[in-house]
Length: 303
Image 1 (cartoon, rainbow, N blue to C red):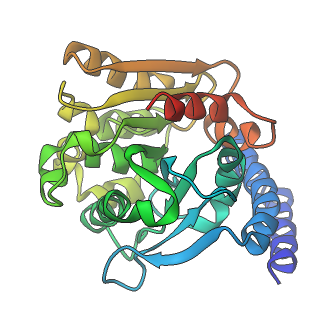
Image 2 (cartoon, rainbow, N blue to C red; image 1 turned 180 degrees about the vertical axis):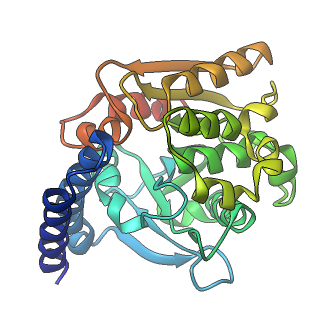
């Protein structure tokens, strides 16, 4: 059923592209890579007996997550992955391929579902991804994960949400956690300054209605931007960005990195030459292993 649905999705995407002919390069690349990742990941997701699926991490029906485990019991480093998708698209099953690439290196991977716009705005999304982290800290030992070695982060919109969990002290405090609850934070092609992203969209003749609505209007941009919460009392930080990103500019991660350094935080910054926004993620997932997987594994093994 999943494979049939995937073929229908592909034909629909091709039809739209041919008829309209108006999509930007990044959007075309995103959908092609998306479908390829979908195909590769679905067989892994459907057939793998070592995945605990739809585990509740909260009281709401949508608050569920998947836990991917190595075949051999143990106490492994944990990677919590918050997916991107512009705050209004994506699902946890789509990113099974991320886990498929990471698990063989001896890590447990947690991928939560969080509510998307228009059914949710920033506050609910933030509550979801933060609750998923709290669940991981308290429960991952039951799934062969080491709660002392948790990497937490995400990609694009997921990087923004996860960064706010880590850097806004009030968020973790609400869950009786401190930044030291995780070993490291990683952000991939993240939106760390909502105002800067809005200005980037406008300068390119676009608007950002979804992002603006999710954050609660322009007056809330500062309060939802991780760059405004940089401080030294955080775990190690790894920021990753492609230098051909046409969706979220490279300068976004560079500015956040400089803000972290100015705050005396322990941060590093990796620039991937020739990589765009979605391409950075989906292309590396077709390699064995890709540079993204190698960098995240190195961070996990250092915990």
